[in-house]
Image 1 (cartoon, rainbow, N blue to C red):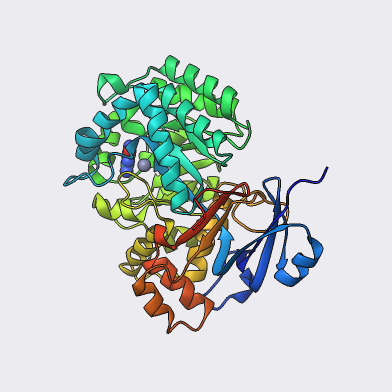
Image 2 (image 1 turned 60 degrees about the vertical axis):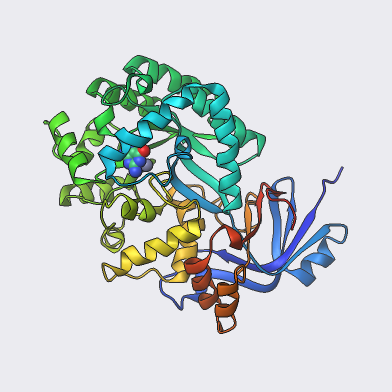
Length: 434
Ligand code: GUN
Ligand code: ZN
């Protein structure tokens, strides 16, 4: 029996490598009248519309012209239980956590609340063009179950984990070294590698875990080397000082994680702003991944991420929204703010590298570029349809755009969810057809 084939027609853009400069046309393929042949959740072929229409004569054609078809966006760091924390006023990291975030996260002990919020969370991701995300759930096992169940229901490639936290937070948000270990084990068993789900062992950050819990996290990492590990690193000066008090034997902040065996190439380190030379050496050596969270770093006044400095050391940086300290679900708006953060340091984020970063670049950071992040045949059919004229301001500006790079820069600067004409997860449209 042949399965249903769909031919998506549009202007197809897919990256094959990281563009080395604004004119690097060797790093991508762009097909002006292109198409993607999709069946069973996979991309069967990418090519010219004419060629593929002949090859797949019976396929249903969905015409997205003049919009751009690109790989779905990948968000490598955000917090699912913070959907009702985003846009909370007036404080920097530790006060923001204590006043807004921790009280809100206690509500995810309730399975009904977790399920309801998971529905909203996934709707927001796909309406903003995000098809894979790496999320922190709350400390409660229920929140991770709600997250992974919703991901499975939508057949999305999602990574996540329940946070491990056993101190310096309200009682309703604490686990213990043993319960955190047991719950994580059970969640890995139930969700990791099942369908498209993947697990990330998630000690929240040094401040909220005792040394005993860090040791248990190290055991989990050792026992599950194919799982990711995610945490926060050097986001804020008060956070760094408090961490040094709590772990006086550590050489620096990163050494807390390193000394418990957490620091591997599977580790994602949110923020990584105020790093010492030894920490940068250790990141370069282990190939762990710093995660740039521009809207969050500006919102909490945390600091400026040194993208060029880390890249210059051969480190692979990921990029992410960090909802709910981040202020937009949109990876386009994340690029917009990221561009400005780099401008302040006389660094550049040109549009080809920008769009590579939120697609194939983040996939490479996750070691998943054979599955997501491109539109190559054989990969999973996670696709975003981008409308460069979605708003009157964009339409007006587009009248003067002459090159693909210019068009991409308009999307990167002015785009948001209004520019997402459609999002396909495993070949299925996630938005109602316009
Ligand atoms: N550090 C520890 N937890 C958090 C969090 O929820 N958000 C941010 N931005 N930083 C953190
Ligand atoms: Zn975070």
